[in-house]
Length: 192
Image (cartoon, rainbow, N blue to C red; front, side):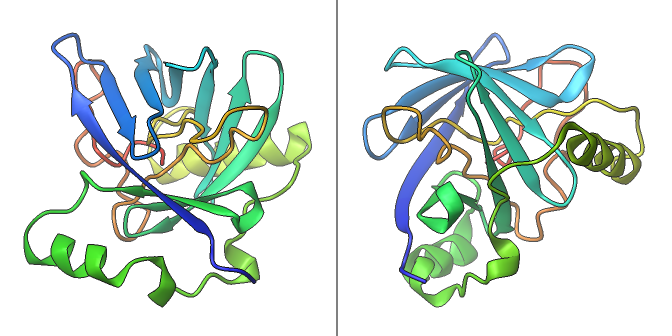
């Protein structure tokens, strides 16, 4: 497998509780959670695209564009989300601090082996998606629904907007650790 293109991003929490995400390639996204659906994030970007990111189970993120195009990503930990069948990895530069952040930034993607098991699916049936939603609901100890908001906007133009999810908390299971569910909080690791 070739080394994936690495695209960094940083999130800024705005006064209205939404997030402004800036990618190193010039792409910018404005993201907001959906009330009542903690696993769903609506976004639009500075290139005219919009859609939703949904956190499914098994660390899979579903990106649905306004035109109906659907792509998938997988949170692979340490602030990284793998998109486009392993061709792109988004790196959350705002999720690490102190020595660990410096160390991980210095290591880059090259030292993280990407295995076939980490690749996001090319497609999923509605039944497969629903099974993952149920899995995510059980893991988060709450109701169903799914959404993502970890950072997922495409770093490139066109329908290949599946590179926009750069999330990661380290183990991938604490994406909502700082989310209080009231719509006014945000976590740097919200859906890659």
